[in-house]
Length: 388
Image (tube, rainbow, N blue to C red):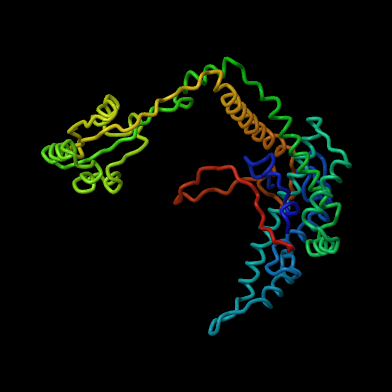
């Protein structure tokens, strides 16, 4: 199934990437959930369950059996027909297949209720913020996606048939994504005000981010003893090439095979005593031996690339961009936290349909023998099946 038409719209990828939007109070008789007084009916739930089941079909074109509690009759029959135990193994029992169907139902139920609840949350939040999308905008975006995903009309008709979705379903999902984008834009726009004082403060506190350190290219030899280092130095001074001596006597793995060449050395990179010697040495002067914990070095500075530092004016644009992004991310994080809290309090779920976004939801107790996982933001990511 194309990305634009998954069972759950890409809300997490647009606005709500920081939380999972999955999902008894005054709930009308035909409803399974009520969000701020607006009902999600049993018929709507069943329709999207069929869509979710179609998206989870293991083989393209196969009609999945929607698991219906409490007996799961059709699901069990389908699973039994598809079961192909290996030679010598007994087929799965009725109880095992029923348990499998129950787990499948729970997974689909959570996915569908997550979509339906989050859809109502987004529409309700858009209304409260004054964010609007015209039918014309929705239709234009829908046609764009449709032409990209389905160049031929027959392909689109096939998709509708196999996915169980209607054009109205797809228009709803396009609308939800457009609303999510506009909500996000409104939230971040309010937090795109970086002052000159903030820019100057950041520049002052992070000077290394705006500078390029001096770099030196070396010829270097490392030996175990001071005597070996002095002898190597004498050989070079007497006319032998640095490369030939380095390849024969150096024990420095980083430069030996290179004929003693060590490029791009910056201050603070090498051992303290060697670092001090390297950055106080003059070009083309054979220096050493320098004692270090690793042995004795002799070296020669071949080239020096001076360091540089951006001025505040030069760095201003990049600092502003970074601070703006940080402010916007913080604003979105706060918004999402408040958004979830606000709409959970308005979400009533009937018994048997309680998921994590219902105000009746109670997180399962963690067994004392296990270590609770650190809570992390999640996104609903349903499986996709390509139509092509």
